[in-house]
Image (cartoon, rainbow over the protein chains, first blue to last red):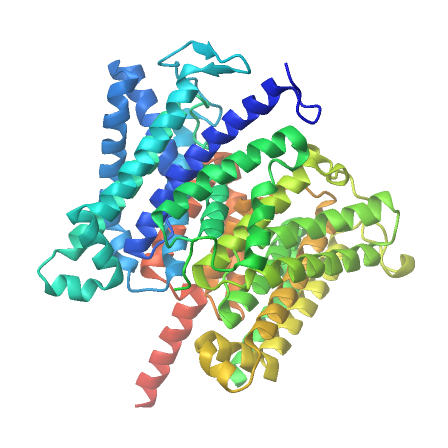
Length: 293
Length: 312
């Protein structure tokens, strides 16, 4: 087989696949953050905790009720999304008139409470979730585990469906209009507060769906979303929250860059995304796809 | 303001006799966090910039102090200076990048940089990784004049450092520089139209805040004789926000009160493990929803209302 700059192709493509999978999660999570921010003007710090809740919901459904993975893929986001709606009605609703910072602090507090409670109940070491589609294909230049291939495809489909829903449907049009000018949209007889609640529920469900997809790859643990959400913040700063497609492209792209760094200079793989963020801030402070708002 | 002077006099007397009633090491830790919270509040309360990554200055200064004192065998004064200057340099680099965005993005950028520093500290050889820097010797200050092995003596040293930092912040806020900062916080466009270069003022405030957070972090390493990953972690950044918020943002004494409340709470709940996190999170939620002025802010308002009522 050929070699590239002294790197065996198995390692290169293996890491690229890992990067693609990480990128899939960055894309799904930053998409949810962008949708929520557009409508609520809140950066949802609870996003990582809700991703974790999605994984836990799938794990608990399997353990206690024997619900298979494919059913959890629908059920878990619905459950976590409903919990999100309750949180929005009880807490978030009260701070929309305040500075954005308070939303950040409130959702940070919510994340601490949720992650703390899960740690108290199930500890911080993880539990495994069985792989729903074991096996894989030998592609000649690398081995592709079927499930991992499925995750990348599923994430792409989820991202495109979300993009289509927001950019091409009537509900999405209401949503974009309410983001631009809520008062005017309300004057047309559209229930904007309900639209806001719904948006938060959908954004949270998206995080939970990512969590279910992650469950068979990662350990299901209370802290699985803590560090991830910080990286996703950097992704959001790099991409800018102005465009849906921007979030998707940035998410996958950064995952690949991270994967390549793991091949060529492993010590920097944890920090490369933050370095990219610093460079983007220097060159294009509004983010690659952002408008200054 | 005579009532303010009386208040400060009472507080200083309390601080002087406090070791008779409480464990000095606990008091020193609380003072370090109080200075840290004041430094954070200088930025948020007076420049309107919320940094969610202040742990990078606090924690890195601890590492700088430990490395200079332990590996290079320098006196503690040099260690403290290294901590302050190192944190200020880090503040200059991260601040120059972060002030290119405003509001919520600023918070996310500082958070991301702090996470980068955290990952750096996990891998860098001089931080000791997961073990941290252990057993930093407590050497005498001023060329042997002040022995720091005794906790009581060290308490007064730490109190002096704290008062120095607090005094510096008081001077900044009440100087023309502080007035311009407040003007930028309240209406940036207007301040710019009056000819002030807002970005320069913001950056200076950021560097000052970072340097003072560094002073707090280096002092904590002097007291506890170790520097670990906890101090650079995102949770510490969150804690300092909580302290300032509980005490009262934009009040000069508030962060001190907040730091003592949170450190005392952590002390009593130390045996309950993750409950501390749950309770801290719940406090965040309650304060943001109901008591946004914090303990000192709410008290000041109650006091003002009482006085206007009695004068009528």
